[in-house]
Length: 316
Image 1 (cartoon, one colour):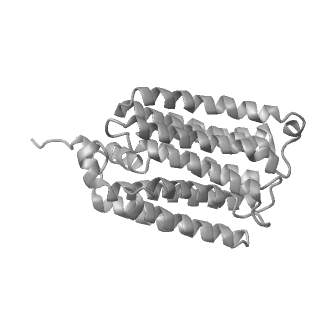
Image 2 (cartoon, one colour):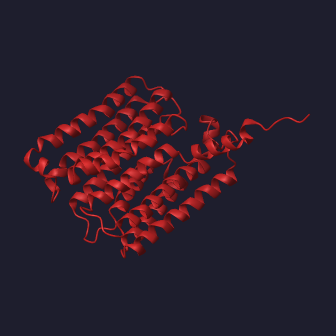
Image 3 (cartoon, rainbow, N blue to C red):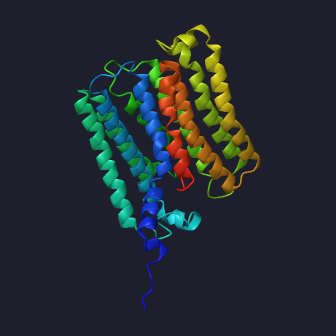
């Protein structure tokens, strides 16, 4: 009598391992960035805009998934010591399969960005997509363990936001750069925070991460003064914007304060997950400032699959 297949060999287990490899719940936060960027720069939809947005979303999703898969490939020795439950060190995904997924999705993502540029007759989607792909490889393969690692990761998110804004026919203005830089700064802080998720964290490092995260939120306070056309509600009552950001910023602030006083790995991982998901809420707030509540709700919908899948698939 032969033994049945092990849990690792079951099709459902292999699928789950691959989805865990690419951090599927977090992919939807990248899609929220792109959707926000696109809606922020499009007051109206043209005949091809839906197809262009679809290609940009595909590019963003593939590039994000490629980045985290390649991150696990390059980090496999450290993960074997600190995170043995991850797909590669646990044996659920082979190194060769992870490389195939990572490099394959990177190429597909870059090709999708170029295709969006062709369809929109614009050069920026291709340039931003290729820069994002290059930044991902640079972070995963070289910069991650260095002091420049968090900055490189922030640059990846900044480029992801700009990817959503890349089909705008006119040059980017201060408002576009501010939104992208704010999201990028926020992710620099989250990356600093995540460096402490596999071991007992240093309180001063966690405090620095908290300061950078909240600085990213604070940068959005300057959005209304530089926007050309905020919604009428905020023109008439700008205090609503500052109150909204204050309330939204208080949510990660409380989590960050708690983790500084209780810097254990489990608590850090929960806080990292919370901060990543909160990014969707900040994307929706930015979209609200430019397009009102309807478009903000569209962005906020990405929180549903991210949250639901996060209960089944590990996202950190």
